[in-house]
Image 1 (cartoon, rainbow, N blue to C red):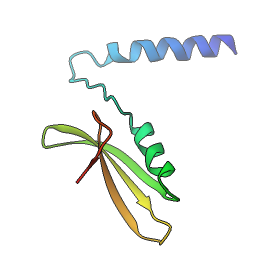
Image 2 (image 1 turned 90 degrees about the horizontal axis):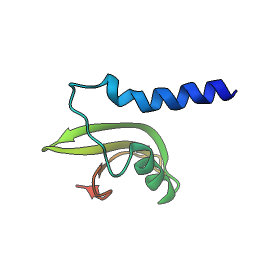
Image 3 (image 1 turned 120 degrees about the vertical axis):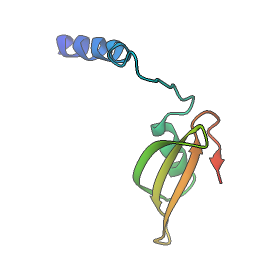
Amino acid sequence: MRQILTVLLLSACLAPVSLAGTQSYTALVTLDEAARKIIQQGRNKVLATRTETVDGRRVHIIKILTPQGRIQHIKIDADSGRVVK
């Protein structure tokens, strides 16, 4: 078990090195945090998530099913955590 944890931690540390030469970006609000924020705001069910660049900004797009049965796409700015219209 300890070896598995060591390997996982080591691979997490080395992951950015394997991406050297590609454009990297660290969001202040992760995709997971954005999805949790949407869930906490109501009885929404998250159907899908992705991150895209929109107008030069990184935006988390979260597809939800509302309590009324409607599907919506919510865009959250990855830097500020605010909903983008």
